[in-house]
Image: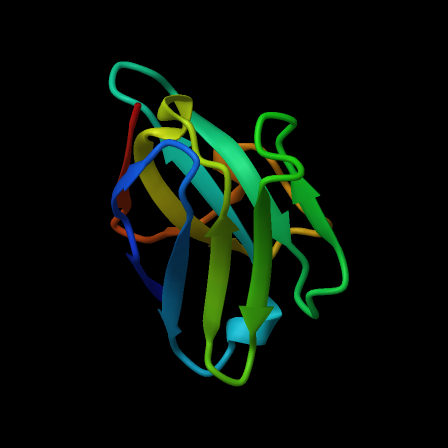
Length: 123
């Protein structure tokens, strides 16, 4: 599956952004989808994941209560709504897909990756 992330940009602290990740292919609903982020000079970290049907979600503690992941299988798209953004959220955000069970949090469990979209939060 090919993934295309979009929606990044520059936003002030306290603001919101919605990221989208469009998947090419007819098997989108077969994949667990995840969002990761990588700040300059740091490792790529787990942000959130959602199961195939969207029934279950999982969040990193750092974004819990501020970010919401969702998916629309009819549109082959997964979203990440980000609210109450702060400068520590500045990173390149990547969407990823896996056939694994549950909501994996390790990068090595995801086989397919989008190209990333940059989110910059100014103070």
